[in-house]
Length: 122
Image (cartoon, rainbow, N blue to C red):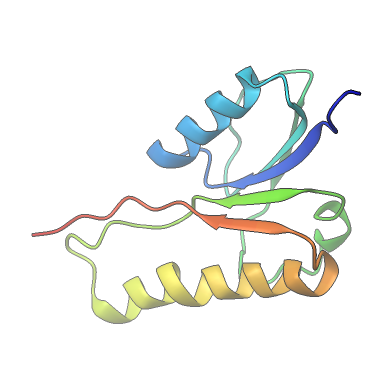
């Protein structure tokens, strides 16, 4: 019996962590479909890949219908803490993450949501 092929969603694939996750997913035969949500285009094409360019991760209303039917979400969007003020860092690394996760929890309760982060320490 063949295992079910997975459909995954990746955010932040233009960054270091997200790009690594995307490259591994593209090579994985167990993954059938990948959608990436970024603020800018990747400029990459692949038969598995769908790209969603969306500038505002605090308002997902215009793309909600494109964010369903996935088995997992790799949330790789974030920022370095080096040189960041505490308010902006919290907004990007916590508030945005929780907003994105909350959107999926309500539409895809069986979803696997994985936060992938690169931490910088001084």
